[in-house]
Image (cartoon, rainbow, N blue to C red; front, side, top):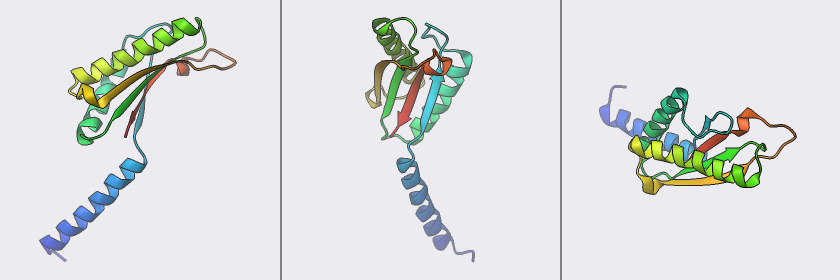
Length: 128
């Protein structure tokens, strides 16, 4: 059937279903850092460009930007480090066009564990 009205109706119905699924499965992104650093790597910058595109398509969504550190270095140091990482990511997203009022940067401190893991040196970005 080549009825344009029917086609549009099906498209809008499917688009609504996709938007609902995205809201239920809010996207989460991770940006990783070197030991005791909060500067972005070229890979991180590239990934944040993608995050900014997703955020632009979800223009009413909030971005929780949560920084973490591994357990090396002491709690106070790691809290400050996690805050710097969150701020760095938030600032880059703003530079890429995301409205700063949509971004909630938080430093969550260290992720405790039996070992110091590079995967704990990160910022998680949750769009919802």
